[in-house]
Length: 485
Ligand code: ASP
Image 1 (cartoon, rainbow, N blue to C red):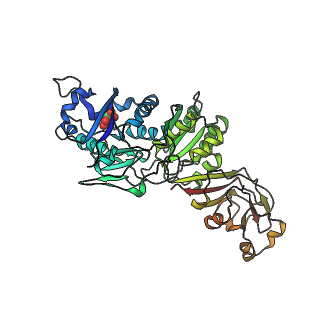
Image 2 (tube, rainbow, N blue to C red):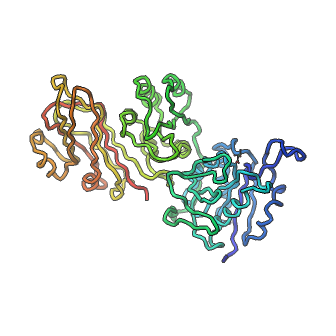
């Protein structure tokens, strides 16, 4: 232990501070108690080389948490930011993930630890997990005092793990190890020793700290399930003032493929101007739009990918971006890019409306956004959906060549594979049998695309149908993933 640290403990309620409502009846329902009544259960706070100041807020069961309360917490942190080494927020476990996620967005240029914690069992219970959680959270909030590495993030400490807040899920309603961040490594582990995983920590921006104070609450989250009636979607999408939907999809981002279902998705996006983001219902893993036919239809209609964001992160991020005034395409683009370490990749989608008749197709040029980092391209795919040929070609071999920024001409049609691939701007070839039924075509062009893209330049892709026949398709997309580190 080196210096004497100062931590502000912001107490919002939750099980950690609950006592039975009737003092003489231990079985009466638990309600949050004033800190004055709880102090005696944590004499250890006097032993720590820390000044722990208390800021008690309106005490609630965290089931009553809402966006206004998130902003109120952010304001408390803003008002005391320069007076403390870090902040500990005592919070109910039920919605701790949402609050941690919201604060990660609301606190801009954070350079101090903001650690949320709580407990499964109240402080006053003999076997409670509360004291260990609280003491470790306080230590992490004032790391220099305890010779620990600084974690300048909004994080949840629970049981033995420090987790990035916007990556967490509450995974148990009773186990002391109640939280996990399934798609992201823990920021620290606390056993006998506290070990911070320095490689996983976000670096502070170095810019001045400030807070955002607007969130748009008119967003809903909805689970897809077998038998979900399209009509229900229609009625939800008609809700007055609704701005966005987090769709919790099956597996890697799939939904029912029935026409009626897709029609409602299209209605939501095109007619009601909703932003619909797909996140997986699975505890772990990510959405890969276009991997299955079921999700390529969604991609075509303009549903965006939440990649490996948690549903909570997708919901709060949408509220946050809408609160900042984003809408339309700008909102869709920003939703797919990492803001605070809440997702592992950025997604850039270039969508082209239904394509072409004729053997040569030249797409409109599209700009690469300023934050596009060519050195971090992790994957680049070109997808053509529902590719078909005219009826006079019931059987054929689809033979397509893809180029970027290359003025292909009719002559390109007659080139051999070798000649095509020798053109530096060639992204690759796709050959696929066609039996009169539309097929989807995907080309993984990660390597060539990374070499060909020049930052600051717009991109144009062209497709050549090398069997010299008029090919048509329902939609084309280039989707690029870049790493976020
Ligand atoms: N209902 C409580 C709350 O979230 C549960 C807990 O804290 O564990 O406030």
